[in-house]
Length: 307
Image (cartoon, rainbow, N blue to C red; front, side, top):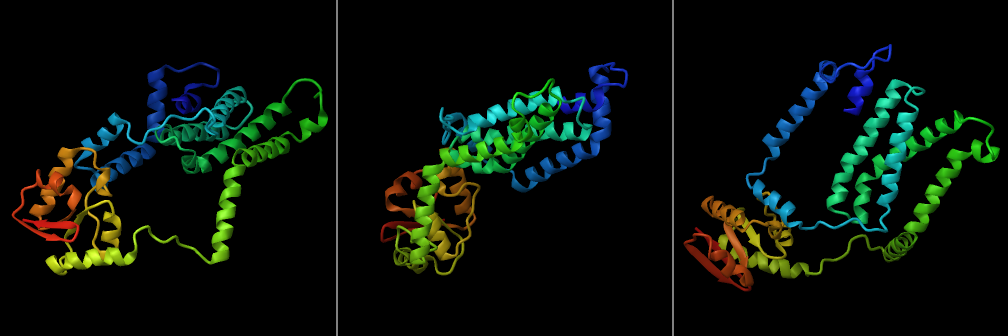
């Protein structure tokens, strides 16, 4: 809406168009871009639609994995950058090119939109996802600050600071990051140095590969080389990976299912399609209660069932 008003609402004489006229002009000028957005939404729905969408709403309703933003989070500096950038853009709107103004507001909205991910999953590591937009916003703020200082009234109190404001702020920003994440950086560097000294590029799995291959051999003794296998086990990824079985379903691993009804419907669909379910003994009672089956075979620590 801000882009719309800035781009189309103001007439040369300073007269403001009506809202409907401004919005109409905006959509007439930008309908190709809007059409591309709608086509993208439609393509996403057709290619990646989730038949068990209720499970997604369950994640939101139950707040699974959601955490509050810490009071010591670095993200609070982002809030200040967004506010300052917005205010400076409004203040300098008559002194910067229109494309600059539009790009600046677009970048601010991009940061706000990307931040929605961090709001729900507020781990500091998640800031890496936003880092590209945040760096662009930081440099936009520096440029805006330079413009604001350049048009300031009167003689600056400190000419050195006035001339080198952008450099000083950049150095302060880098120093702040170094201090803020210094312990983590030192820890990571130490670990990576030790790994490089040992020539260790990959950490071994907590579960020995031979144990995984033994389970796969037991499964194949029942089903042969049939590729239709679904594991219900805490180590389902390892079993599927080493066994060469393609993952199926919208949620992997199986523990990410929130809706029991949706999970049971999913398992019944697999069985009806000729899949074999390989179930951990501790979970067998829970699963077999809700799925209609005709055959089952016991192997060490697991039960193999099929229709």
